[in-house]
Image (cartoon, rainbow, N blue to C red; front, side):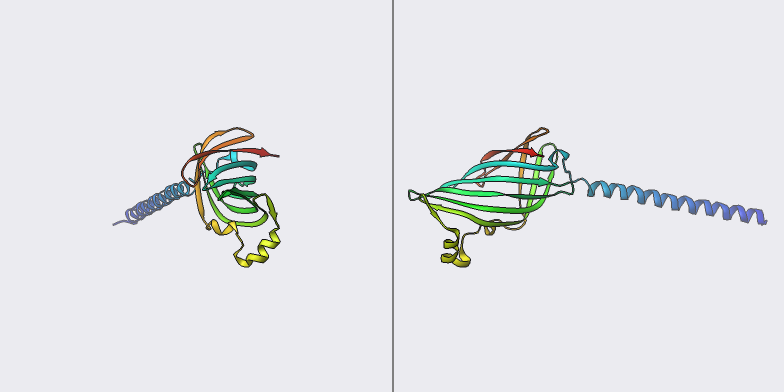
Amino acid sequence: MSSLTINRKKLANIWIMLGSVLAVLASAAAIYSWLKEINTSVSHNQSFFGRWESNYAYPITGGTFTFKGMTEYFQNGKYNVAGTITVAGSVESKTYQFEYNAYGAGTWTADSRIFSFTLDNIKTAPKSYVLDGQDIPVVLVSTLLGASAPNLSDAYPSGSSGEARIVSIEENEITLEEKDPKGKPFIIHSYRQQ
């Protein structure tokens, strides 16, 4: 066998090895691209980015739950919320109204139809208590009840999640349809803040 034949065989083997390496690299690139697409399939609808003010209410047993506040949605899929929660109603013909300052944080996703969120953390602090038309000082309630004073933070387990149907998205207003704890729909209007 001549050295020319041996060199051709070596050259052919080198080309086959290079072709195999290129095929493996191309496969790896395709797999990476596919995995990246799966990993980034979570949608953060750009229309939500920014600060939004909302005020909504829904019925609860014997009363009404109301929220008024500001939510800021970030591009990384996180949000912060701050506002006032009011729980009002009557028990045995005696009226009550409890107000709490609330601060929370979590994650969110949205496409063109569904808005999903998870409340990772919420802190509430009593703002006012009114029983049958009488203001009850928050300090008095805390002193009398001690550690067992009503705290809404305890009512929301970390990681609580929800979904809302996107009714409409406009430049300065988003309208969502969510469900109350009994499964009845209610509407939330949010207005962009500058």
